[in-house]
Image (tube, rainbow, N blue to C red):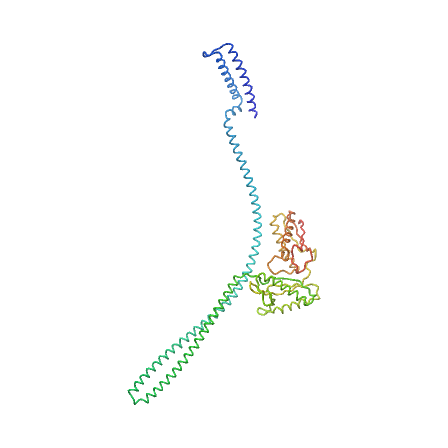
Length: 497
């Protein structure tokens, strides 16, 4: 910048000096009336003034070039510097545009990274649910395999019966063939006797003397013919009887094939049907007081059975003769069981026998065997004492969780704590479990409030940003029939030692 200012100042001063010196030189030459190349003095003065200005300008520029290296470089490399400046300005602009594009791309990648993190969390949840679903499917497959093995045994028995029937049919066919051969032999004998009769008649015509003997022979032949005819009729009756037996045996074989086909269709139906309840699944539960009347206790049991029936109907069970989709049984052994009325009376007597006890009774309706759609569900009644397990404010269990992890990992740790430590502690203390695969924490509670309470606990642990100790307390009196959830538990989060 300073060289540009210096050059401008020098250029202005030199221009003024050239103007002054040219004017002065021109006036002196005009006064002397000098002439060059025979030109008029006025034109000679103009030429000398112009040449003098050019020489002075050349001397000034040469002096600046010789005396100042920076000026010389700027003067000689001006076009190169200018083109480089334009190129650098263009590249700078391009770099600015690239920088803006990279900043925009960086923001997009940050958004994609956040979305990918959310997808990873969802995938982890989906993986957990898939593992649970796989465990359910494994249990269903095991049950179906056992049922298929049983049906295969029944099918093998039917096949053995069918093979025996086919063997018997083959034996009857052999007997029929033998009878037919005997009939052919008898027919041949009859034909031979008829020929003998013709021969005898011919001899009767030619030999009158032997008439008596011939008549006797004829009588004997006639008697033999009658006997053979009677034998043929007897063989025909036997053949008809055997034919009836063969027809009956064919019908028996047909019925066996129909039974085999029905069993095969039943096996296919069992394979394609989805179980609505597995053996041991709980359909309903309720608490009843042994201090009320027998009529009241029985009413509570029937109300509980109606609740279980409504649940079974929604899943596709069939309503039976008792006007419910469930039927109460009590297995004495693998083949003998009590009917519904006897089971209800037995449960009534068991509950009423505890009138002197302070605790109420918990009645569970549990599936007695695997059930498929279109069938009535067989259930059992299970009875427990509904004792107080956790008084209000009592510690259930505690665990340590690292609050420095990501929110998703903290959530998985909390779920593991609730489904593992809390559930095991509750079972040891006397909580009556729900015998199915549904999560204990969501049973009988609003899922929205459960998730809200769960995320609130996760936020508390994450806010600590350290290894914390989580204590689970009973926020209300919890009895054996009560499911543990976020409504009847409270949590205390403190920094671990």
